[in-house]
Image (cartoon, rainbow, N blue to C red; front, side, top):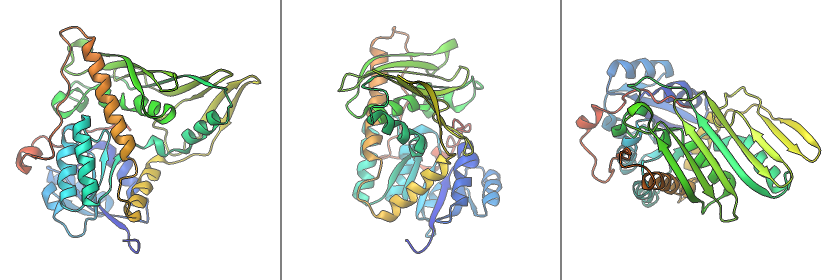
Length: 360
């Protein structure tokens, strides 16, 4: 496969696919976009024409194509397991939007299927592919702020229309899996594995069927505490801070910077405040390149399998902790499709694309 581009098809026409991922794939010389599928033939044609590939009205038809090596799945969360599972069984590598599934058991089973099939299954976590975060991690490791004592992170977006997919529990909506994913993954990135969920709260404002905001307190095995906040009815914020015995490091915006953004890392230490300005970086293009490299490497294990499973464990623990301390009227958790017993293509496509996912 190294002598030709990786042939990728897209299952769905969500906003994140059209606005961020498809342009990055189209610009990558190691990728060939072969097909775009949608239950709406007109929509599939509109997007396919834009990127010069085939328009298909059936997801199963895409999986049966000989000119598809891999698929990108930007569908609602509740459909990730079903269609990622079908794609793996069809012999296709998979790049799936985050979170991979709505719970750890399903995530673990899906990763096991990929491993047994010798295929790459990668969760589309873009911010970890931006070098600004590795710079920060190196600063902390070098002792720039002394011993790390505390971590905080926040990600929130303004209110969305009531019909938006994030407000639909049957499709995996809710602030925890959508925007809460970012600060939780950031805590995992900077504090490492083995995090304990010390406390958590999820709130559903205005009688929403899903949680609209949340806060989490985590503790690392080394005793570093982390405060995480998220929501989808807030003024926009995307930031994190590491607080040490001798200083602080802050990054904002942190998780979804545009490709032309010059990141600024604010450092305050014994010498006072200073700014470290970094070169712009396209984290979307970097994620696509990472997926292509993983496929071409022939690795037995998907490159982010460990982090993906740890993240799923943490998200489950957050919800369980919040529910255990919530009043009896607490909302229920979202439903995750079982990829081991997928529903028929016809029943699935009636609810496949819903409202666009557009948080990135």
